Image 1 (cartoon, rainbow, N blue to C red):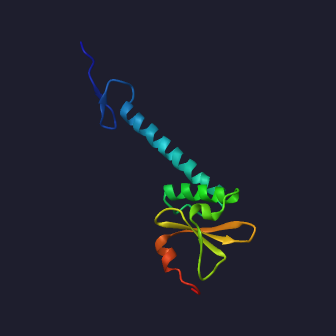
Image 2: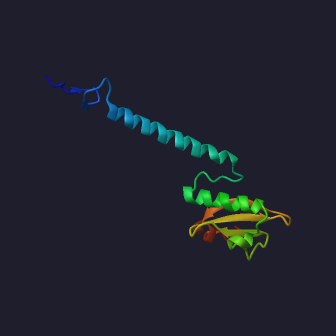
Image 3: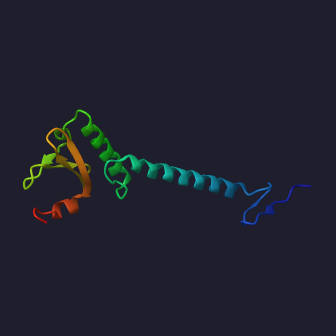
Length: 126
């Protein structure tokens, strides 16, 4: 006599003691939550707040900031000084985001990563 499928409380049907489909979905959900926690914990080490930015922008901004702390110059990343304030340097991170840095003479200190739209709206004296 063949075994009969039983219905689990979740509504799925199967032969085992538990619903393997729901167990697999729960394991995937837990893994996703764990990865999200790990990603959020990486923001504690940043010099500036990058938490509101997309993942690709965060990764590229971190790479640029680490290189600036090393021996590389802002010109390696196509960075330019602003015309109205020569001590502020703008480095393109992606097409839509810019990293603003303050030139201290001996070092370049990252200040913020802003969208290109906010960057273009920013006027001297505002």
